[in-house]
Amino acid sequence: MTYSERFTAEELEKIINAGVIYMCACPAMVADSVRKLREMYRYQLNCLEDPENCSIVHQSIARNTAIAHAQMQDCLDEVLALEEWDRTTLDMPAGLRQRQTKEMQAD
Image 1: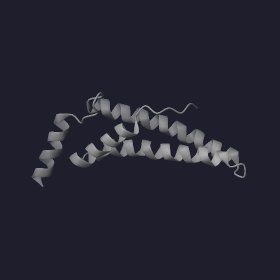
Image 2: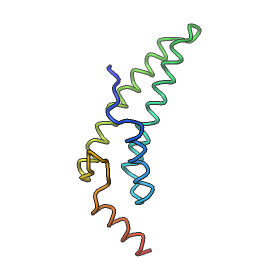
Image 3: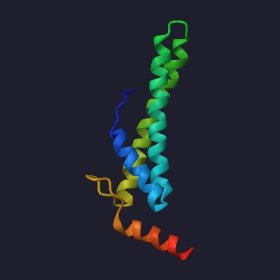
Image 4: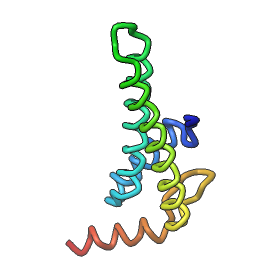
């Protein structure tokens, strides 16, 4: 399984911050999951460097983490497309921002 990162750390942070600002948690949760999977993958690579660790265990975790990471990146791509985020700037669409603002004002 090949491990690749389609979103930079900065892009993930921008999506997460937009979720906080506009109270739209779902894309932010997916972005945060991608970020956490990256941490897990890197941790497993470090574990593989220690010859005293059972390498087959950490290879399995790394491989499955890479699969989950790819799937969650696909999910984030799909969510951003469905919600019509600007893929160049990763700005949340105005209509979604306005909907969130209206919901906040209604409370």
